[in-house]
Image (cartoon, rainbow, N blue to C red; front, side):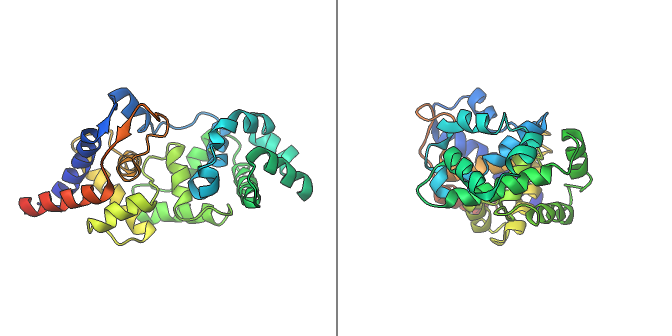
Length: 267
């Protein structure tokens, strides 16, 4: 197989494997996990940033914090970035700590990291007049080129504490920048163990992008974001919005070994 044929094969097999090993999955449910539409307001963009802590803080990620979404929404005035910057981020440290502890809870000081992260992300978003200007700026980096994607990621990494080379593209993809992906443990494991890249985060993101670009010859709606989601679902088995509705009985190791076996036969 050529490299392009291999990439197309992997993308297609990932879709097939997910469906074959999922019970209760429907096309409607599946598409909710592949929704890469851009946000229409800065409030929505900020809300995604606020809740990104669930991807980097295991304690909060397992605490059922989604049950408190409305409380946090109320404290942050519907995630109004301007309100947050003027009325919350400027509070004295002790008051800010108390507010974040109330909003996010926890028996340790982990909420302080969330506070620093959220305040930094709000400050960063305040650099843009509106969501149109923000996306226009992001689009000024040619996301079809690795060096341009890496450049934008690094700029944001330097501005927002506790986000790194995995969490920035995770936020970007979740606000509709579909050429970005999150090189989390599951995606890194699958991509690197298939020999498609090293386990370096930037190399993994490039491999995901290239596979998705090649698959566009089959499906012009393919994207790095969608492939990321599919591989993550294979690795985690976590249909987080459909607990008790969809169950998954596959695993990332089995998927990798299946792909290797079939590629060996094809070659």
